[in-house]
Image 1 (cartoon, rainbow, N blue to C red):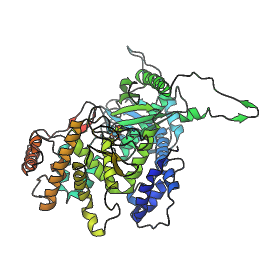
Image 2 (cartoon, rainbow, N blue to C red):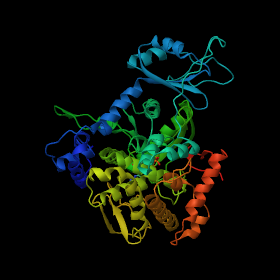
Image 3 (cartoon, rainbow, N blue to C red):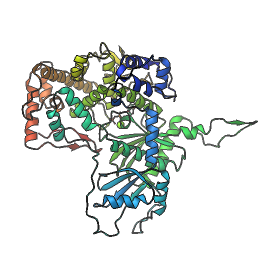
Image 4 (cartoon, rainbow, N blue to C red):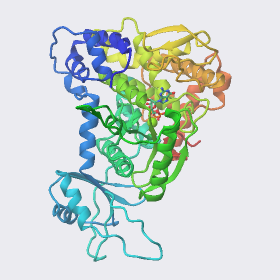
Length: 551
Ligand code: GTP
Ligand code: MG
């Protein structure tokens, strides 16, 4: 997929070139034909590289390579609702009748589920051929041979053992604050937070499997379609519990209609035509939405949001516990995901910083899972990237300063945007510089691929002001940590814990006159809540968890 005019990424490439320790994997990421990365590679051919042994920290796969592998894996995988108590050994033996199993895991989501990946696709077919339709009760089952099964025990009393569960949820705020308090310094806290929140291998598999199950449904109409995950599920910035953005890719179907000449003849499909691309998108999504609602086991709460700027079908996939958004004709979003994937792979600190800023924003309700005038995670990620582009100099630091760089980055990120001239300047990721705002939107972040659009157009002045106030206060908190050192005594919260404490009413009066009191107050509140074990997870209406502390 060639994206016009992405020579902007040259800067990024030059940056990567200077960083010998990541050079190899970056080049590999950049070598996929027909992608953003390929355009980047054409812009700037690198000179020789040197292996330094740090490469294993960087994802080695190209975006498209990773997507294709995961998709193929998912096609060999089935989802099984299991009885409460099951013998893992017997379960695997039973399924192995259909072929060797590559791997499997169990998880809980209103019931016990197993994800089983066979070595061969044929095993799935064999299992489907052996599977019965549910026995008739009062209701009539709609026949559909999916890869989502229900396993029943013939002898209820025979199984007693419990299987080991894979966790699909983010840590509770209590656990998070405890592990953060145990960290050695703020740098360590950033990495701990990343480790606790990032998508696990199992969760990623579950996301690709869910796309694959939806693809089975969509394939009834569009046999060559591909349902591709995009957004934070694949761009390496996803937190456990984030939504699953899916893109119904009909390009394969459409490319069938590209002209193949044979002799004097040209054969075309008979098709129905509609006046615009948008109407075509709405019609396709409308039909797929109906199918999901009526025929797809486990898809509930299907909403067709067809009049949005980017029409979509939203639903819950009950078995995986994922909130899903299905779009089509949205290839740019896939390109943006690839761009972020590349940025995330350039330096391990990028992801740690983005995760922390996202958690900080969520803890203070700067972001929300409900659409509105607030900043989105996508915009925040772009702001972090812009900030990293604007660092002077944007090159490897000396060895001595490496240790403290991550925490410095966080402090300086807040400082940078706490003082950014949002009233007159826009953020331009293509050129890595500020520009005069083309309109009066409070926050203007140019869409890197559709340059006349602002990705944060929804943000109003008061939400932006809240962001700036919090950024200024957070600078101050980290500044104090820097001066005083981490206040490690017992389980006393410090560093990120202080930053992630929800803002209280006292924040409003903080203004520019900063005193130590608000942070201390919030730390006290947290300490008390941890001690009295009152810290809770709050789960919002979309099943996403928020970091929040009951006070
Ligand atoms: P989460 O909050 O973890 O879901 O982050 P996300 O990056 O997945 O964000 P979201 O689900 O809101 O959007 C999914 C993807 O759509 C993003 O990663 C972007 O690629 C794209 N996207 C979201 N908002 C915009 C926007 O305003 N403009 C453009 N061009 N793309 C957007
Ligand atoms: Mg998302």
